[in-house]
Image (cartoon, rainbow, N blue to C red; front, side, top):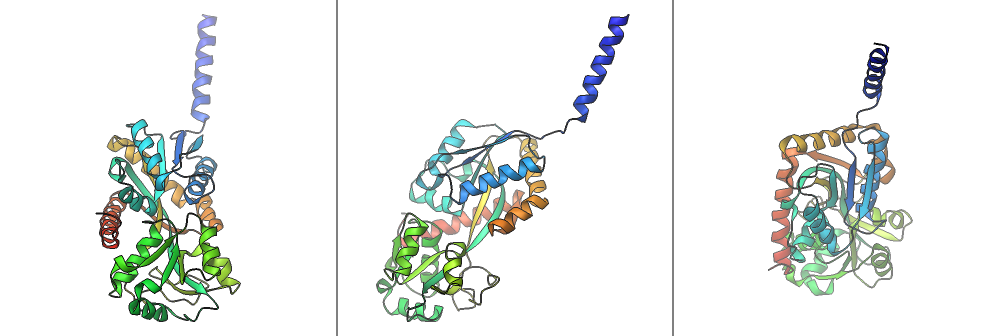
Amino acid sequence: MEDSLLKHIFLTSMFAAAIALPAFAADYTIMAPAAPGGGWDQTARSLQQVMQKEGISGNVQVMNVPGAGGTIGLAQFTGQNNGNPNALIVGGYVMVGAILTNKSPVSLKDVTPIARLTGEYEAIVVPTSSDIKTMADLVAKLKADPGSVSWGGGSAGGTDHIAVGLIAKAVGVDPTKINYVAFSGGGEALAAILGGQVTAGISGYGEFESQVKSGQLRLLAVSGDERIEGTDAPTLKEAGVDVSLQNWRMVAAAPGLSAEQTAAVTADFDKLSKSASWQEMLKTKGWADTYLAGDAFKAQLDKDVSATETILKDIGLVQ
Protein backbone atom coordinates (compact mmCIF):
# COMPACT_ATOMS: atom_id res chain seq x y z
CA MET A 1 0.00 0.00 0.00
CA GLU A 2 2.80 2.36 0.97
CA ASP A 3 4.72 1.51 -2.18
CA SER A 4 1.61 2.23 -4.21
CA LEU A 5 1.13 5.59 -2.49
CA LEU A 6 4.79 6.57 -2.98
CA LYS A 7 4.59 5.54 -6.63
CA HIS A 8 1.45 7.69 -7.05
CA ILE A 9 3.14 10.70 -5.41
CA PHE A 10 6.26 10.22 -7.55
CA LEU A 11 4.27 10.01 -10.79
CA THR A 12 2.14 13.00 -9.82
CA SER A 13 5.21 15.11 -9.06
CA MET A 14 6.86 14.05 -12.31
CA PHE A 15 3.71 15.01 -14.23
CA ALA A 16 3.57 18.39 -12.47
CA ALA A 17 7.24 19.02 -13.27
CA ALA A 18 6.65 18.18 -16.90
CA ILE A 19 3.78 20.67 -17.03
CA ALA A 20 5.96 23.33 -15.41
CA LEU A 21 8.65 23.00 -18.08
CA PRO A 22 8.37 25.39 -21.06
CA ALA A 23 6.86 23.69 -24.09
CA PHE A 24 9.15 24.25 -27.06
CA ALA A 25 7.61 23.75 -30.48
CA ALA A 26 10.66 22.10 -32.02
CA ASP A 27 14.41 21.81 -32.08
CA TYR A 28 15.22 23.35 -35.44
CA THR A 29 18.20 22.95 -37.73
CA ILE A 30 18.66 25.90 -40.12
CA MET A 31 20.75 25.52 -43.25
CA ALA A 32 22.54 28.61 -44.56
CA PRO A 33 23.40 27.63 -48.16
CA ALA A 34 26.45 29.90 -48.14
CA ALA A 35 29.77 30.39 -46.37
CA PRO A 36 29.92 31.83 -42.82
CA GLY A 37 29.77 35.62 -42.58
CA GLY A 38 27.53 36.43 -45.54
CA GLY A 39 23.95 37.68 -45.56
CA TRP A 40 22.28 34.25 -45.49
CA ASP A 41 24.57 33.06 -42.71
CA GLN A 42 23.86 36.23 -40.70
CA THR A 43 20.13 35.68 -41.22
CA ALA A 44 20.31 32.06 -40.02
CA ARG A 45 22.34 32.94 -36.93
CA SER A 46 20.06 35.87 -36.11
CA LEU A 47 17.08 33.50 -36.30
CA GLN A 48 18.93 31.04 -34.07
CA GLN A 49 19.59 33.71 -31.46
CA VAL A 50 16.06 35.13 -31.41
CA MET A 51 14.23 31.77 -31.51
CA GLN A 52 16.16 30.56 -28.48
CA LYS A 53 15.85 33.85 -26.60
CA GLU A 54 12.09 34.06 -27.20
CA GLY A 55 11.49 30.43 -26.23
CA ILE A 56 10.22 29.54 -29.70
CA SER A 57 12.72 26.68 -29.82
CA GLY A 58 14.84 25.14 -27.12
CA ASN A 59 17.73 24.35 -29.43
CA VAL A 60 18.54 25.74 -32.88
CA GLN A 61 21.54 24.55 -34.88
CA VAL A 62 22.95 26.33 -37.95
CA MET A 63 24.82 24.52 -40.71
CA ASN A 64 26.61 26.03 -43.72
CA VAL A 65 26.59 24.42 -47.18
CA PRO A 66 28.07 26.99 -49.60
CA GLY A 67 28.25 27.02 -53.38
CA ALA A 68 26.58 27.97 -56.65
CA GLY A 69 24.36 30.76 -55.34
CA GLY A 70 22.77 28.48 -52.74
CA THR A 71 21.77 25.72 -55.16
CA ILE A 72 24.21 23.13 -53.74
CA GLY A 73 22.73 23.58 -50.27
CA LEU A 74 19.20 23.61 -51.68
CA ALA A 75 19.73 20.26 -53.43
CA GLN A 76 21.16 18.72 -50.24
CA PHE A 77 18.34 20.17 -48.12
CA THR A 78 15.53 18.84 -50.32
CA GLY A 79 17.22 15.46 -50.77
CA GLN A 80 17.77 14.77 -47.08
CA ASN A 81 14.78 16.32 -45.28
CA ASN A 82 11.56 15.23 -46.97
CA GLY A 83 8.77 15.35 -44.39
CA ASN A 84 11.05 16.70 -41.63
CA PRO A 85 9.23 19.60 -39.89
CA ASN A 86 12.35 20.58 -37.91
CA ALA A 87 14.53 21.37 -40.95
CA LEU A 88 14.68 24.93 -42.28
CA ILE A 89 16.68 26.72 -44.98
CA VAL A 90 17.26 30.43 -45.48
CA GLY A 91 17.61 31.92 -48.94
CA GLY A 92 16.74 34.96 -50.96
CA TYR A 93 16.25 36.63 -54.28
CA VAL A 94 19.81 35.79 -55.38
CA MET A 95 18.85 32.11 -55.19
CA VAL A 96 16.01 32.64 -57.70
CA GLY A 97 18.49 33.76 -60.37
CA ALA A 98 21.09 31.15 -59.38
CA ILE A 99 18.58 28.31 -59.84
CA LEU A 100 17.94 29.50 -63.41
CA THR A 101 21.51 30.34 -64.43
CA ASN A 102 22.98 27.17 -62.88
CA LYS A 103 20.23 25.00 -64.41
CA SER A 104 19.66 23.62 -60.92
CA PRO A 105 17.82 20.26 -60.80
CA VAL A 106 15.91 21.55 -57.75
CA SER A 107 14.05 24.83 -57.34
CA LEU A 108 12.02 26.70 -54.75
CA LYS A 109 9.04 24.59 -55.84
CA ASP A 110 10.79 21.71 -54.05
CA VAL A 111 10.60 23.36 -50.60
CA THR A 112 7.76 24.65 -48.44
CA PRO A 113 7.92 28.48 -48.41
CA ILE A 114 7.27 29.85 -44.93
CA ALA A 115 8.00 33.59 -44.88
CA ARG A 116 9.84 36.52 -46.39
CA LEU A 117 11.80 37.99 -43.50
CA THR A 118 13.78 41.05 -44.58
CA GLY A 119 14.41 43.23 -47.59
CA GLU A 120 17.08 45.53 -48.91
CA TYR A 121 16.89 47.88 -51.86
CA GLU A 122 19.51 48.31 -54.55
CA ALA A 123 21.59 51.48 -54.64
CA ILE A 124 23.27 52.98 -57.73
CA VAL A 125 26.47 54.89 -56.98
CA VAL A 126 29.37 56.62 -58.74
CA PRO A 127 32.62 58.06 -57.32
CA THR A 128 32.14 61.67 -56.22
CA SER A 129 34.79 62.65 -58.79
CA SER A 130 32.57 61.32 -61.61
CA ASP A 131 31.01 63.76 -64.09
CA ILE A 132 27.75 61.82 -63.62
CA LYS A 133 25.79 63.89 -61.12
CA THR A 134 22.29 62.38 -61.41
CA MET A 135 20.51 59.22 -62.51
CA ALA A 136 19.39 61.16 -65.59
CA ASP A 137 23.06 61.71 -66.53
CA LEU A 138 23.75 57.97 -66.21
CA VAL A 139 20.67 57.08 -68.28
CA ALA A 140 21.72 59.55 -70.99
CA LYS A 141 25.16 57.86 -71.26
CA LEU A 142 23.51 54.43 -71.30
CA LYS A 143 21.18 55.41 -74.12
CA ALA A 144 23.97 57.04 -76.16
CA ASP A 145 26.30 54.01 -75.95
CA PRO A 146 25.23 51.09 -73.70
CA GLY A 147 28.61 49.37 -73.90
CA SER A 148 30.49 52.46 -72.68
CA VAL A 149 28.73 52.32 -69.31
CA SER A 150 30.24 49.57 -67.15
CA TRP A 151 28.33 48.47 -64.06
CA GLY A 152 30.16 46.87 -61.13
CA GLY A 153 28.13 44.50 -58.97
CA GLY A 154 27.77 41.00 -57.54
CA SER A 155 27.55 37.63 -59.25
CA ALA A 156 26.23 37.24 -62.80
CA GLY A 157 22.49 36.64 -62.72
CA GLY A 158 22.19 37.97 -59.18
CA THR A 159 20.05 40.83 -57.89
CA ASP A 160 22.51 43.53 -59.02
CA HIS A 161 22.71 42.13 -62.56
CA ILE A 162 18.91 41.77 -62.73
CA ALA A 163 18.48 45.39 -61.59
CA VAL A 164 20.77 46.67 -64.37
CA GLY A 165 18.85 44.62 -66.93
CA LEU A 166 15.57 46.05 -65.68
CA ILE A 167 16.94 49.61 -65.78
CA ALA A 168 18.13 49.14 -69.37
CA LYS A 169 14.79 47.68 -70.41
CA ALA A 170 12.86 50.50 -68.70
CA VAL A 171 14.76 53.22 -70.57
CA GLY A 172 14.55 51.51 -73.95
CA VAL A 173 18.05 50.01 -74.11
CA ASP A 174 18.58 46.42 -75.31
CA PRO A 175 19.44 44.48 -72.10
CA THR A 176 21.84 42.23 -74.04
CA LYS A 177 24.00 45.32 -74.71
CA ILE A 178 24.68 46.15 -71.04
CA ASN A 179 28.28 45.99 -69.87
CA TYR A 180 28.00 44.27 -66.49
CA VAL A 181 31.17 43.42 -64.55
CA ALA A 182 30.56 40.71 -61.93
CA PHE A 183 32.68 40.63 -58.77
CA SER A 184 32.81 37.70 -56.36
CA GLY A 185 32.87 39.88 -53.25
CA GLY A 186 31.62 43.26 -52.11
CA GLY A 187 35.16 44.40 -51.25
CA GLU A 188 36.41 43.79 -54.79
CA ALA A 189 33.45 45.60 -56.31
CA LEU A 190 33.85 48.57 -53.97
CA ALA A 191 37.56 48.91 -54.80
CA ALA A 192 36.77 48.89 -58.54
CA ILE A 193 34.04 51.52 -58.11
CA LEU A 194 36.18 53.80 -55.94
CA GLY A 195 39.11 53.32 -58.32
CA GLY A 196 37.04 54.36 -61.34
CA GLN A 197 37.52 50.98 -63.03
CA VAL A 198 33.75 50.87 -63.67
CA THR A 199 31.35 53.69 -64.52
CA ALA A 200 28.85 52.94 -61.76
CA GLY A 201 28.31 50.51 -58.93
CA ILE A 202 25.16 48.68 -57.91
CA SER A 203 24.47 46.69 -54.75
CA GLY A 204 22.46 46.76 -51.55
CA TYR A 205 22.66 50.18 -49.91
CA GLY A 206 24.38 48.70 -46.87
CA GLU A 207 27.42 47.84 -49.01
CA PHE A 208 27.95 51.54 -49.84
CA GLU A 209 26.54 53.35 -46.82
CA SER A 210 29.80 54.30 -45.09
CA GLN A 211 31.40 55.51 -48.36
CA VAL A 212 28.28 57.54 -49.23
CA LYS A 213 28.27 59.13 -45.77
CA SER A 214 32.02 59.87 -45.92
CA GLY A 215 31.63 61.55 -49.32
CA GLN A 216 33.61 59.03 -51.38
CA LEU A 217 30.58 57.86 -53.34
CA ARG A 218 27.59 59.73 -54.77
CA LEU A 219 24.24 57.98 -54.37
CA LEU A 220 22.26 58.48 -57.59
CA ALA A 221 19.11 56.48 -56.86
CA VAL A 222 17.64 53.54 -54.95
CA SER A 223 15.40 50.77 -56.25
CA GLY A 224 12.71 50.90 -53.56
CA ASP A 225 9.27 52.45 -53.59
CA GLU A 226 10.45 54.93 -50.95
CA ARG A 227 13.67 56.83 -50.38
CA ILE A 228 16.16 55.47 -47.86
CA GLU A 229 15.88 57.32 -44.58
CA GLY A 230 18.75 59.74 -44.04
CA THR A 231 19.55 60.13 -47.74
CA ASP A 232 18.26 62.59 -50.35
CA ALA A 233 18.67 60.29 -53.36
CA PRO A 234 15.48 59.68 -55.37
CA THR A 235 13.91 56.33 -56.06
CA LEU A 236 14.40 55.05 -59.60
CA LYS A 237 10.73 55.79 -60.28
CA GLU A 238 11.18 59.38 -59.07
CA ALA A 239 14.18 59.62 -61.42
CA GLY A 240 11.99 58.57 -64.35
CA VAL A 241 13.05 54.90 -64.48
CA ASP A 242 10.06 52.61 -63.92
CA VAL A 243 11.82 49.96 -61.83
CA SER A 244 11.19 48.76 -58.28
CA LEU A 245 13.27 45.88 -56.94
CA GLN A 246 13.93 44.43 -53.53
CA ASN A 247 16.61 41.92 -52.55
CA TRP A 248 14.72 39.85 -49.99
CA ARG A 249 15.62 37.04 -47.64
CA MET A 250 13.31 34.23 -46.67
CA VAL A 251 12.96 31.03 -44.67
CA ALA A 252 11.54 27.80 -46.08
CA ALA A 253 10.79 24.38 -44.62
CA ALA A 254 11.36 20.92 -46.05
CA PRO A 255 9.25 19.37 -48.80
CA GLY A 256 6.50 16.90 -47.97
CA LEU A 257 5.08 18.58 -44.86
CA SER A 258 1.45 18.18 -43.87
CA ALA A 259 -0.81 21.24 -43.64
CA GLU A 260 -0.65 20.97 -39.84
CA GLN A 261 3.15 20.86 -39.80
CA THR A 262 3.37 23.83 -42.17
CA ALA A 263 0.95 25.80 -40.01
CA ALA A 264 2.99 25.04 -36.87
CA VAL A 265 6.25 26.25 -38.44
CA THR A 266 4.51 29.36 -39.82
CA ALA A 267 3.07 30.10 -36.36
CA ASP A 268 6.60 30.01 -34.91
CA PHE A 269 7.77 32.60 -37.44
CA ASP A 270 4.70 34.77 -36.91
CA LYS A 271 5.67 34.82 -33.23
CA LEU A 272 9.30 35.58 -34.07
CA SER A 273 8.40 38.44 -36.43
CA LYS A 274 6.34 40.18 -33.75
CA SER A 275 8.89 39.72 -30.95
CA ALA A 276 10.84 42.61 -29.45
CA SER A 277 14.06 40.61 -29.90
CA TRP A 278 13.55 40.27 -33.67
CA GLN A 279 12.61 43.94 -34.07
CA GLU A 280 15.78 44.88 -32.18
CA MET A 281 17.82 42.52 -34.39
CA LEU A 282 16.44 44.20 -37.52
CA LYS A 283 17.50 47.62 -36.20
CA THR A 284 20.95 46.38 -35.23
CA LYS A 285 21.55 44.79 -38.64
CA GLY A 286 19.91 47.62 -40.62
CA TRP A 287 17.45 45.21 -42.24
CA ALA A 288 14.02 46.35 -43.42
CA ASP A 289 11.08 44.44 -41.95
CA THR A 290 9.26 43.04 -44.99
CA TYR A 291 7.61 40.08 -43.25
CA LEU A 292 5.16 38.22 -45.46
CA ALA A 293 3.94 34.69 -44.72
CA GLY A 294 1.60 31.98 -45.91
CA ASP A 295 -0.29 32.16 -49.21
CA ALA A 296 0.59 35.85 -49.67
CA PHE A 297 4.30 34.99 -49.65
CA LYS A 298 3.83 32.02 -51.99
CA ALA A 299 1.99 34.26 -54.47
CA GLN A 300 4.72 36.92 -54.30
CA LEU A 301 7.42 34.27 -54.71
CA ASP A 302 5.75 32.93 -57.86
CA LYS A 303 5.61 36.48 -59.30
CA ASP A 304 9.29 37.09 -58.49
CA VAL A 305 10.39 33.80 -60.07
CA SER A 306 8.42 34.56 -63.25
CA ALA A 307 9.74 38.15 -63.53
CA THR A 308 13.32 36.99 -62.91
CA GLU A 309 13.11 34.32 -65.59
CA THR A 310 11.88 36.95 -68.07
CA ILE A 311 14.68 39.45 -67.40
CA LEU A 312 17.42 36.77 -67.35
CA LYS A 313 16.21 35.64 -70.77
CA ASP A 314 16.23 39.29 -71.91
CA ILE A 315 19.81 39.70 -70.67
CA GLY A 316 20.78 36.46 -72.42
CA LEU A 317 21.83 34.50 -69.32
CA VAL A 318 18.96 32.01 -69.59
CA GLN A 319 17.73 30.40 -72.81
